[in-house]
Length: 354
Image (cartoon, rainbow, N blue to C red; front, side):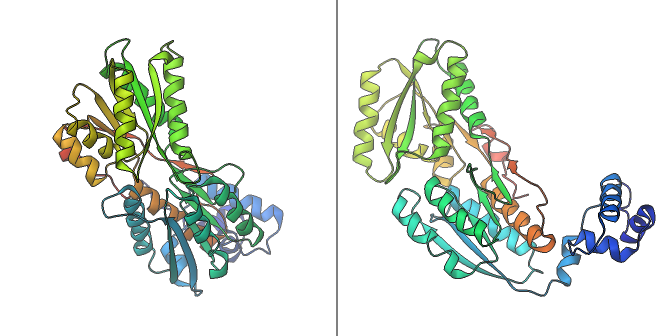
């Protein structure tokens, strides 16, 4: 890779002064449209990328960043996102920040609403959100937009909002990938269960809804949608989950596969193991410690992983770039890879933060 062009070289190519180029790069205005066009065309042609850390040296303001994400236990999905956020804050530690964390119960709408209502009062310069509940997220984003406060999402995108960036996997594609795994892993014509977790105040997460749609569309395109059986289970009430799962299997004795459309596959795996249910290919999402344990033990056959730690890191990176340069480094959505993890490649897998 060749050496990057300097600001002085860009100025010479565009026929302007280095100070004019610097104003464009750092979005400080007072540049004619003709000069702006010439500079931006030159920057695009030479592939110039701003040195964030060098820019940080002259950035004197202390930035208040509010992070409102689900509370979590060590080794769980949202704990990995939190670790990725911390990775990003360490990477950009030359930017002086004050971080305020607001944690909510991802299975309780009221808990989310209570925490989101605190965000504006903390007077943030930027916000990173776990947008689990759509209505509450949209309401908060309206306030952030009105105040000119930039924000980023991890884990999912939300329609009718304007984040600096949304960092997530494509959930329709994830559902289709589950469908392909199940098509190859189960006998032709057998039933396949698809389970979503029940939430307080909302039937299920939007990510699970999209995964279910992707799964259904995959089978429908092949004329096999009648193989799918959809059901719910409880995260908080294990006995209720046990009844629902066992009833599902009794009602469909030909069931050979179950897809758990969130990261709680270990709950279903334990129920099946305790009841001596064999011969069901169980697929779930995310490399949590609990899921990894069941994958090693054989009660989960495969996991779909969507790099949560990298999601947190990239959200911080996008917000820092926006605070420095007043423009999105990568607009719209960043879609994460979706990895298929089985017991054979588990020992060699490392979900990178970058």
